[in-house]
Length: 218
Image 1 (spheres, one colour):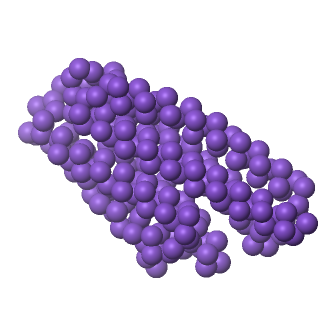
Image 2 (spheres, one colour):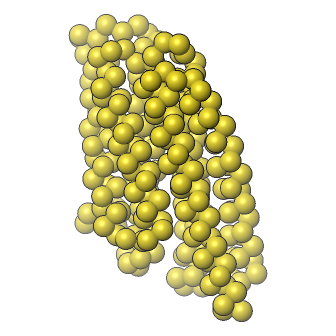
């Protein structure tokens, strides 16, 4: 029975990695669609979210079955419960990718963001892509250095997010009301995407060290 249980736990990890890989693909397509006004890529990112949702439901069902049949305790219980919480964060990251892609589709053939902020959003999107790939590596290897790296990259996203708000609230902002709304929403989606990655990194760190830290660098 113990061998079966360990095999099931390995399956849970494998499925988390698979979902994370799809999220990384989705955010890459969504940010490119957003920055390049590519409606084709936007449609692909939106469609792929359905697969992420499907796999998340299947993973949750597996985890619940393990809880019911194996009745794990101690660290094994933490692994299964953490998997449920991680899958929820990954599903939300997929949703945020979709929101970014939808903005690109709604504004096509125009670009979503005015010229003055395009460089900022290009940087933010690139950081989210890097973070998503780091997250997949973290879920695969449980290398705690990657958890720290994700937090560092998230700090950069936060700084860019703040700069967007400062820009749209500044006296020199010439954007229309729709531009202000789009920039605010898009910035929030990028920032929340990275925040969810940090949340997952904290859970992986907890499983690896047995200690819960509000700050990964602590």
